[in-house]
Image (cartoon, rainbow, N blue to C red):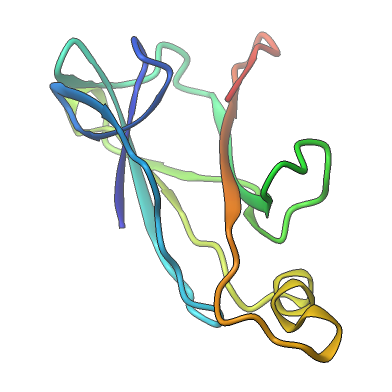
Length: 129
């Protein structure tokens, strides 16, 4: 899955140059998925200014901002630089936490709505999400 984060808008967008926010993403329980992220600014793909930045991808229960992740990839792998910079995550959607949430104490839900988080930290300690 390819994602774009617009640094001017401060959110995921459908593609570089189009600031329409992404309204939803869908995943299946049990899937392992490679998620690639590129940053854009002014309609162009850009690299983060701090090449040593580290990133996290996580999914939490909707509205549970301080809660634990149901799914996470606690680091990204960066490849390329400049307009070719790609940040990749490899989360598993087969976690004890997600399975318990979907199973709903023995009453499995057909689907659940969650919220996602992408966060990166610079070497200076600045956290952005």
